[in-house]
Amino acid sequence: MDINQLIAQHGACFYFLAFVWTFLEGETAILLAGITAAQGVVHPGLLVISAWLGSFCGDQCYFWLGRHFGVRLLQRFPKWRHGVDTALHWLERYNTGFILSFRFIYGVRNFSSFALGLSAVHWRRFLSLNFLAAGVWATSFVAAGYFLGHALDAILGDVLRSFSIAMLAVFVLIGCGMWLLHRVQRRRQLPLPPGVRPMIPPP
Image 1 (cartoon, rainbow, N blue to C red):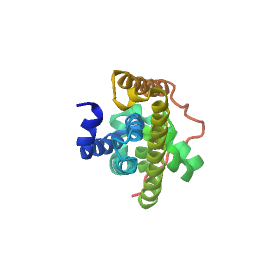
Image 2: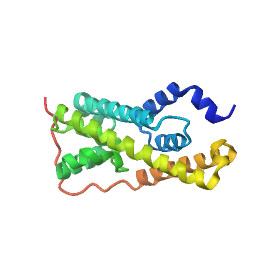
Image 3: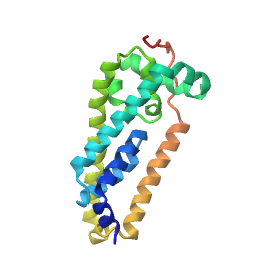
Image 4: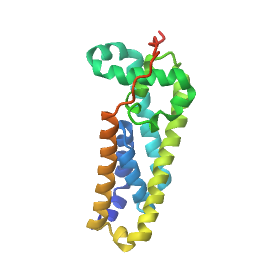
């Protein structure tokens, strides 16, 4: 049994894993899942929904942690302060635009929802904008993987459809490339702009 058949027989588990992965972070996994969808193994629409809900729920959870436990967590993990202060600065500067786009900003996105919980942003406003942003993010990465899958199919043909060792190598290369990008971005953190003012969370 090849990987295609295995995924097809356990489709529900695949969508659940997509939900869990995007709850935690997940662009690499969703990009690769989009490539799988291009082969007809999983449904791209269901994949978008799984990624959408996972990303939305994950960031709602981080927002809740920031709103209720943010100050205590920052005291316990002071290394988070740089990322939180940077995210709050971009929120102050761009407001709605930042909430809609922070998922695409490496170096800031990991702290953004938590930082927004510490800000004066009302939870209802964050919920609605977060739901919209999660949908844009999920659709973008699934679509990128989907079109990349078709491009690879045109190049590799039957090799891609059979999920041979060569295809697994492509997956590994893409995964390593995304991992390396994360490493570089984390080492080259966005500089904290001058004039950052702390934002006090609402009661």
